[in-house]
Amino acid sequence: MTSLHSGYGLLIDSELPLPDLAPAPAAPSGPDVVVRLGPVAPPSAAAVALPRGLWVDDERIGIDVPGVGRYACEHGDRITIAPDPGATDARLRLFLLGSALGALLAQRGLLVLHGNAFVVDGGCAIVLGHSGAGKSTLAAEMHRRGHVVLSDDVVPVDATGRALPGWPRIKLWQDALDRLGVPSDGLDRVDSSFAKFHVPLDRAAGPLAPVPVRWIYVLDRHDGPLRVVPVTGAAAFTSLHEHSYRNEILVGALRRTHLAHSAALVATARLARVERPRDTDSVASSADAILADIRHVSDREEQQHAPSRANRTVDA
Image 1 (cartoon, helix red, strand yellow):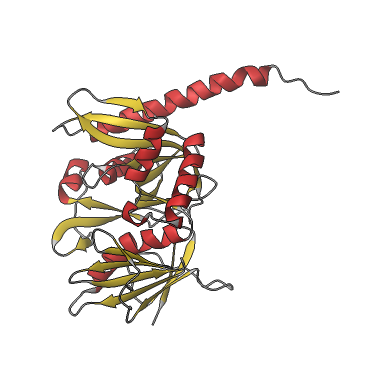
Image 2 (cartoon, rainbow, N blue to C red):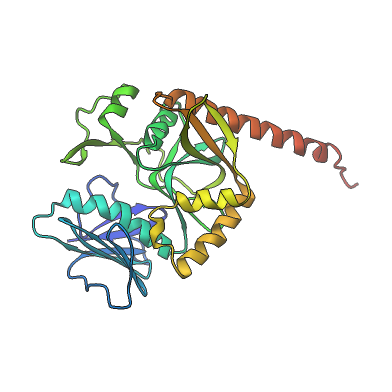
């Protein structure tokens, strides 16, 4: 039996149960992506072996996860999973909705970033960072302040520079829940082996639309005060590559597409580094700094556009 779900603008027909995702109605054109359980051929002799169990074999991107299974993403529209003996559905979902889906989105020509996205005044802000940098905790803080969270962990950006909305949840560790004052009672664990939980997001207003990316912030630590530092030139490209989701797969045509989309994005969005003091819980102050930077940039843009509007004339 299969079930239909929506995410990242795609209708996904999955044989693996996805109970943490909202169901979607069938479409006359059929699903965009199918997920099936079954045998997966091993990579060929010509395949490119990559770190973390990843491999690229012509039109296939594979992920081998010991104790879980082998995943194969093909042509941007199919994911096949060969489970290992004893692998639970929860473990299979964890890598399906992370590495496998991220690879499939890259196959579909999207710039896939490792971060979180939220909405401010009709524009999208993306927060990037390595695992453990506090991206999801910061997204939860923005949600607490009333900003709509578009996506958690995997942020795909299309060729027009719009971030696509993902699943209606944030994944948070127990200590992050404690800092935010959110009880874990009743929350589903991401995996039974560690204290990380799915925190549902309210999407009562219905499905979200893609949102133009206007700001990108990279979380970092340093020995100094909290500050926001603009990133330009070659460093901007380096940051986008460094914080692309599973950037190991960016070889051949995928790398060329990534570079083209990165160039388009840095031409229209501000990229900055948020340098935070080491060993300091700075979630609230980081949120303050990012929102203040957004207001400053927006005010400056408004002032730049004001003269041109004032000089406009109306034809008789």
